[in-house]
Image (tube, rainbow, N blue to C red; front, side):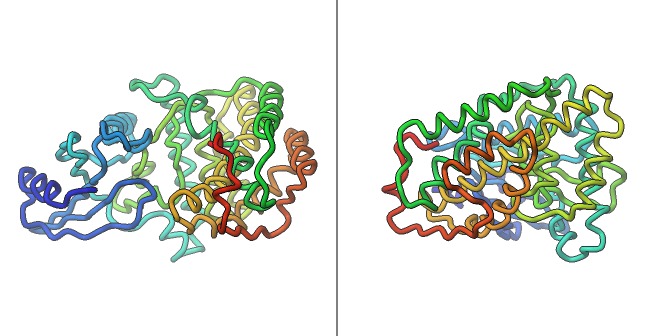
Length: 351
């Protein structure tokens, strides 16, 4: 679907004809990323569906990458500069932040992970302090797939483990529990949210200083929403279990400069957003396996189950914990997801 000839023509007009091209990583979206090298220089080519393509989805549009990159740069952070663009054909040429992410550093140098998580936390504190007023239009967190996606644990995960189609009204009943929990909370500060803030999307730029040592990528799905969400993504990561001591230090570091009311709100909303995040991703893992045959996210189910066990112990989430007990859903048990025939057990109105 993505025409290599268009990419080569784009590179030619950008002054990169004949560059050595290497595929970089894998992306869960309909997008390919390449590193191009020529005459001692390197850059990154992003090749995706054009923004106006019928199958292009929110959170994956190149125009958003361009304007959000500019915004992040304007508030003093490291985001890739855009060298050339042909958005009509789904192509961008951007600054190369290298190949070392914080995820790589954490895997290769576990002893440094405390410092790396603290660096990432400082970036989020930087964003919090500078995004009370946001100079670009961004989607609202509550109007998009992230918040709505908290229902995926019901729509996809429950039928997968119970091997029966959900009855009418089950998702609505579950969402009503969430509605009551959210209404009990204080007003939460709203800020710029990267919305996919985890170590694989944070590049290590050793030659830069302070917060600019962290290069931000994959931010085109950014939204405006509840301030704790990105810190949840970082410290309650769906892909790993962050050590408790590191998690506590980073959370403490973030809130230490907040005003008392902000701190109270932040700490009240943090466990709520963590649980919603894990409910979304555990269901999304099943959805991707059923719809797209992408099964690698199923490997995260044990980690997500561990997170949900922890989440549901919080007093504010007691009504939700009781609801799961009533549905005989126990995250302490290791679930085996059998994909055979599962598609027939998913309701048509599943999100």
